[in-house]
Image 1 (cartoon, helix red, strand yellow):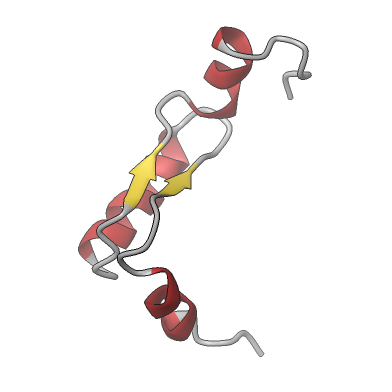
Image 2: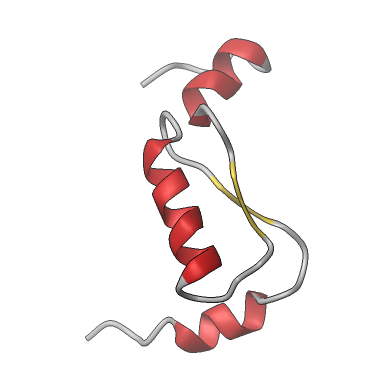
Length: 65
């Protein structure tokens, strides 16, 4: 049985920024919006472009998947 994430979310609320990242940035955008609006986690930040953009602009030694 999965644990209720409420306690974990309370622990990270209003601390350092939480960067949400996925492959291209679409799913992380939705997850960030969920955290901001439904969970009242105000320090969630979407990484636009995701891992793919990070690899192409920052570290092209990493493999694309």
